[in-house]
Image (tube, rainbow, N blue to C red; front, side, top):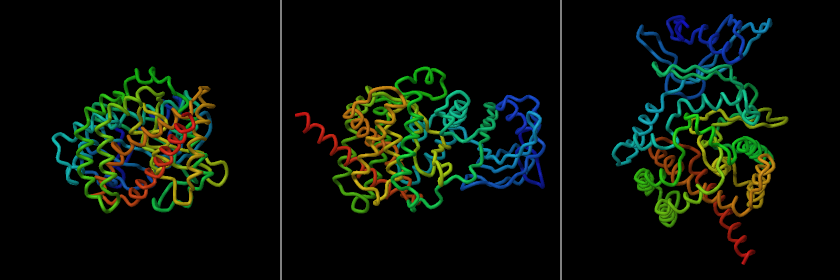
Length: 408
């Protein structure tokens, strides 16, 4: 294939030949012909802008909007799609480490530690998940339509061609939760459960393919304790602002007891999870009709408890308008939905315990990192999300206490 880039009006753009190559392979139509590939702009806030061509070996990184006119199966078609040009995970962890150090993390080889987390192999995870779309109906439902992928390890070029989600609900203002009522949250929770059911307790063949990297377990989590402690040390910044000393002491106890509660996670049923269930990483298809979850950033996907996705999503989506009883009902509804979709029994207390340990993991790993970044980068919603996560954890703890009292 000729170069994946072309120069148009002095700017570097993706070539018509690239689209034709990827779409022929992915749509299984060797005669497919791309008539035109029109660049429509860059989407969102990305690390790059459209490049003025310098004559060097440039590379585009970001999310780019194109209109593609093509002929396939004897029909003329037009589609708008996004080209997601992905960074190799080594570059990603190096960039994140730089921001963490700027935020005051004092730790040798931060990038090396990050590379041992779910950030390992981010550049290939999404590509491989999208390939599941063609064989697994559960993933067909929650993924955007994909028109092709491109991998060139020698040049570290990793591309996904996915649909432009016209008409879908995508968060713009992360402080505005008016679109997230109880009914919509419940529908999204059920769609998460449908996806989780596909590999629930039966993910070994998926792991054996290699692209997921090492599965996180109690041993890996304990090995990464220096990173968790470094995050926690920076969180002292928020004592008296966002939380009190009692919370920080509790957070530190979670780190000290990782072998116990992560050991329990390792004994519960896991599955392939999204593992980055912020509402900025998902969309709602047909929001005014039959709303359906769309998950479009799979860089952190990993093997974990399904509750880990759910506690993170609920922490982002639940507002003060969602009552305690509604939170309890959403958690129980998820258990029943996953049991039905997976055709497996899920004991109620075990489900709640998995939620509790997933909340611990959310705080020790993800939330602590986000708050550390918040010191340097303004994360307008993270303090609200932090408070909501503690509220949900409190509901889980109360339910577990009630279960203990009832059985004694």
